[in-house]
Amino acid sequence: MAEVALRLVEDSDLDALFEQMRDPESVRMAAFIARDPNDREAFDAHVAKLRSSPDIILRAVTGDGRFLGTVGSFVVEGDAETAYWIDRSAWGQGIASQALALLLDIIEVRPLYARAASDNLGSLRVLEKAGFTVIGTDTGYALARDAEIEETVLRLG
Image 1 (cartoon, rainbow, N blue to C red):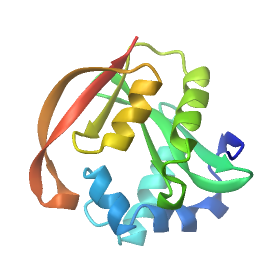
Image 2: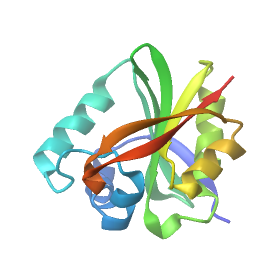
Image 3: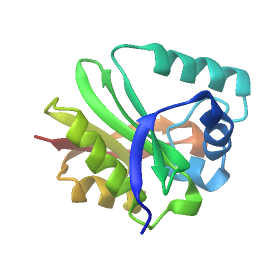
């Protein structure tokens, strides 16, 4: 198993992150995505905003020193939420679970919420292993699927 660590997102990570966030299978699983995952200008503007906001924690996830994705925390309508994006080549290896555990050691805000497409069983498993519990579902328009889908809402603490 890879040695997972978190660090600040660096400029040198952005090309890989852009490619990860436009991978068709990853986009379908995430469901709730940017308007156009292939729009590099919009991606760069969004990531610059994330990296410069004092209210957002964004960390690069590395495995054995290799950039594998991001994990972070942010506030939506007054609630602290967490999200992550892991390169598809690293799915099923415990990377997301380890990254989320490391993030939870950094942030002390509770309750902390998370959301995942209800059919994204891998992501739901990661969240439940970290101690999140399902508190309900919501329906929203998922750009990646061009449809309304069910989303599971989870809470920690």
